Image 1: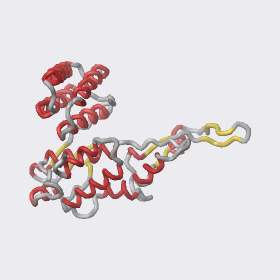
Image 2 (image 1 turned 120 degrees about the vertical axis):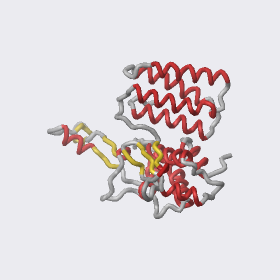
Image 3 (image 1 turned 180 degrees about the vertical axis):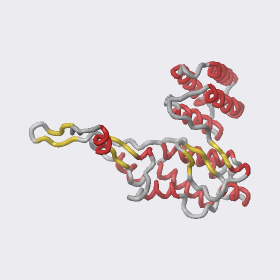
Length: 272
């Protein structure tokens, strides 16, 4: 069983069976236990919904097909004079709270709206960053030193800085980055080398069999030699890596490694 809130938060964030609402509430509890001033803005908006003046995150922007009801032919696609006009008309900002969205997905009928997993990803990035910064807690309690570190923690996530429970200025070693963030589809040799180094660092803590360790190391060696302009081969090797990691027991290192690889693949247009 996990022995701290940070352990629980990382494991829950990797478990698709845990409702996102429950996950966000636990993240809010972590922020409260760390005595971060005020309610972390992003968590509050996800739980309560976004208002008209709020900027909606990219993962809450969806596009659909605009149709009109023809009395003779039923629903037909609407033709727009320009592509920009069509894009504007077909765009929908999802402002409802996570609880409302989860309730919609349980209804029967023709409603189809898949809520992106980015809210879950944001939480796990924060939890991993807290863990790496030495903020783990003991049960439901955190030391004064851990609270001070949390106040000065900034996490770099997709598209910029993730402001989840982040208060104050960054100083010393409090700046924790969860990885580089190149444009999707762009892969450099440096990107691959950094990823291999990150995974290699965690191999010893994955609780794998000797055969699995050998298979993982072989895959990493092959990945390190693969040219970055061969994305299909990079994807194939990383899927092998994920397969091996998936056979390991569920631990903080396993969850973190898998999340890191999957995020890297999405960032480079190689979604697992």
